Image 1: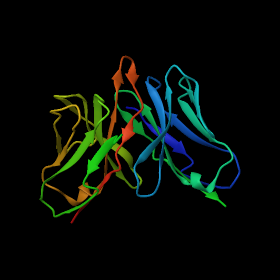
Image 2: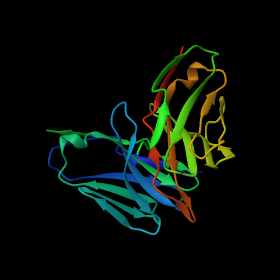
Image 3: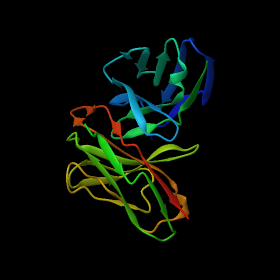
Image 4: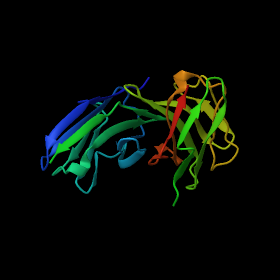
Length: 109
Length: 115
């Protein structure tokens, strides 16, 4: 059974700093790894999808990497802004999506 | 594009009542699924479907039924609501393809309270 872990559960950083969110998964036989953002009381917004044949994906200030052999993915956020405050979820995709419990990120102005 | 649309957004039920949560997508996605999100538990898969007429159970299927008569719609039925089913429910869809799935898209959720 796939298990996904996200550490830390919560993170507070001053505005402007670069930061890394971590995601680990137990079964490396995945199709994709997808990162989402969730604002309080809202749905999930897809940020980045890394296919199993890829090592990383970039979108603006976001960069996600994938190392299947070690069962790890990271989401790098450059030059953080208060608007980046949200919960970030990763999901390992095989026949279904298996989610971590998320990292709640607070950017301090 | 509407994407994935869930209705209703909020619902209060009494214990024992039944209801259907609606989910529709306009992206012609084969794969659709239902999740529930509870504090400290993350998102857990209830049921999923890989195409019209095909459904399967996820991690927490008890107390829920699904059917998939069209590609666009994937309703979730609560047979006899219980307080343990108080949660936020999300529907998702994606393309299935050889070797995997494309990006998954989620609806805005249905917040259900069972009293």
